Image (cartoon, rainbow, N blue to C red; front, side):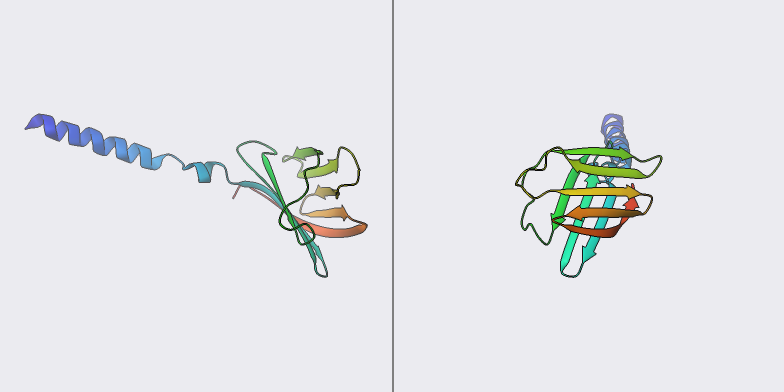
Length: 123
């Protein structure tokens, strides 16, 4: 009788320990968000992952459903709350530039210059 109780206690202890570990979604939360809009145009950039800058996701009303693959240079400094993104080349594909200091930033895209807001995580 003692052995089934001991196994049950071990199983329950293991389940409690597993439930206290952070889930992968919680551990990888968003690190940075930037949003700018002007009239009908909107642009959003998110950086997520376990390290800076992590995975970069971009969405915009101009390039649905995807942004053409273009190599970018990303500099990200969480301590100083500074981020900027520049295209490595400015060819025929659409490209953008983004500069952020603190909670404000500037986006250059397709001849447009607009101001945006930034949020620093993790959340």
